[in-house]
Length: 208
Image 1: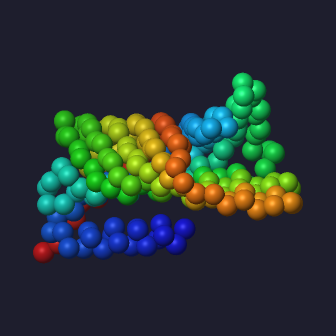
Image 2: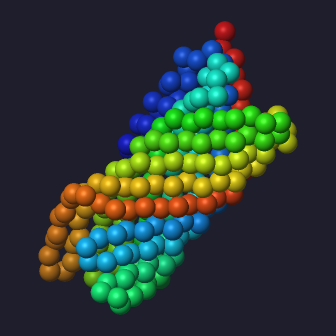
């Protein structure tokens, strides 16, 4: 969480040095599918999520900076190993959460009341699961992005529809049980698609 705060502060600091700033601040509801593939099998996580993002464009440019953070609450975890599928729900865990951040660049195309945009950047993800028998914590790194459309009916408010996506290719994690603690790191295959619908506020500033 401290890393996310530092990223946010740096992101805001960059804005100070621009003469003209157009910023889109979005809050959205998202339903996510995460897929983890490994030699042992495939795990799928279905989740509700709260999505927050900031896109800032400087000096009337359509190219800008992008920050997204998402707080994800897994509902169903389904693991398929050797053809056998086992499903659990959030009720089986004392803690089940995924926190993600994507930092990168964004581009928008204006067309009347509509604003089509895309973003791409570095993806950082923390996954945590815990119950009476085990505790799992994973940190993963990869690439992510966002693509969507904004409907801007007023000067300051807009509605948005789109999807965040990610592919994490490296991880560092630990699994703790009553008998052992296993630490692993290395190559990873953790993908997600996260369609969302939301509402946001558009801010314009001129610094003289």
